[in-house]
Length: 511
Image (tube, rainbow, N blue to C red; front, side, top):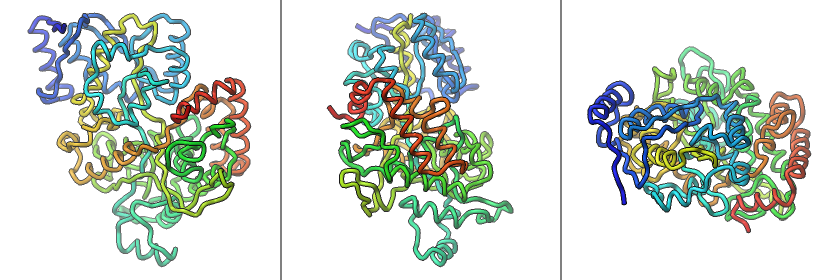
């Protein structure tokens, strides 16, 4: 039996009117009232969140409170301390928060360690709004051992951004062909083309704005998210797309032996390629975290960049983010490669191909085991992630929220996106680029097993540290890959070889 929670009408009217005029101006028909099945929502819940996702919570918080009479306390922490805050709760079980927004790359230990609620009973009891509307790749990242352990919220994958006023100019295309002897594709088809395009457009004023521009930009700073820039390249040289197996759509470990693939020829080739790209990048590239990359690229300093969907949102906001490229960007999947290393035959295969990789995977909402208000937290979670509200969070109407489209319905209408500042042609191209990746049944999932933070960013070792040494020219690509390999062997042994192997195989859908 369902019931409604009512509070005095004057409170509702005043709160919603204020929100409408001063906060988000969401059309009335898009504000979804809270229908409740046997839950008193007048309780207080605590939400743990980091930038930029605080924007989503701040948007819906006053409307939720007005509709339910409940209270939402927000704990805002920097990304750098979010993981620590989460683990303090898991260790102490003090009920310090009821629901939290966390990245899926942590979920091997979070889900595997039994620290959060299995949401299957909540879904069975209360339902979930349009689960079939959630794209398969996003459904996948919320689940562990066949059970739903988190609420979907974000669909993350890297994509290619390029300046149309550079790559699509016939004069430049002719000059490029004269220099390199071939015509590049738009967007670039492979990393070999990216390398040549980056060289061609580096260090001259190709957009005629009186300033020098550069060839390529990507996240490269240590202690940021540079490992995902590398994995963009690594995926193309290390495997080929196909039903996940030991030799297809697999880039991290041998699924039979759990031996890291880090020093395979594919990894070394990728490390060599990304090191070379630094020669055609803006000064200060090694200081580019995700914020620095986005700010630099939308200010107009490079011909090509690789990032999540967030550059597209910031592109539309000249005032808020200083964008000088509104309407000037093209979008596409990651570049492929003209060859890949086949570990099964131990040979290079000369074949143009593209592997879609779900970098980072996205953000999800979790409810810890010790949360004092689990049912209320679940209802707030589905309130934020229902089709109507989540569309407004991803399309730019609320600005840069860090959430990218993840429901089928997010891709089916451009009306909300246009209200978010997009041109209709631009948003159609942007959404196609993202949906093509998320619909790929063979897209390679990111690493999501216990120890993932250590494999990627462990202090003094692992991928992030050694990648930085390669990008800065301190060590060779071969030496970098060798060091990563040794660290990954050690971490796997520390975590438990058989357990890690089972987790990894499960993450690929292998028994």
